[in-house]
Length: 176
Image 1: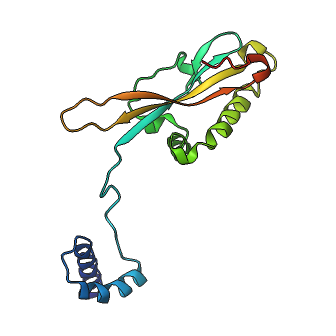
Image 2: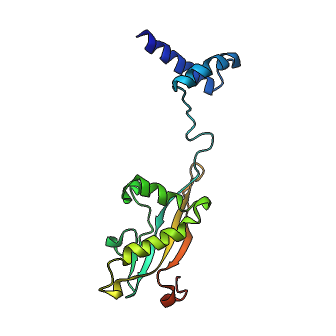
């Protein structure tokens, strides 16, 4: 019980340090044992600057027969640009959620082509019997939603991240 109490006091003091409520001398004494025991905590996940942009991905696609659909949700038919009620539930798992969430960031620009090739391969893998159902073209569109100041309505902007042709010899730059 005493050991638990010592740990609780140490963690409490460490947290006071993060908001600069302890003298610097105490910090230099506390830091080595707390870090060695790995009970140090930092509560700045959203601080000092929380995210001011968010959004979701929409992938409008065109098949060889002219059908337009949302490639991420082909069962829904035409692309729906409205904000999903539970965006996190629209992906297979957390890895896909994270990957697709990063595609709009500048640091991941090079991944867009590879993701485009992947989508073509996956869709067209079993369409050899019916060439009219082949995926021909699509766009990766990020629906960018900026956090507005209090009292204002959020504005949503369509940002085209990537245009892709699965069969460029046939479509010859026809991605809208």
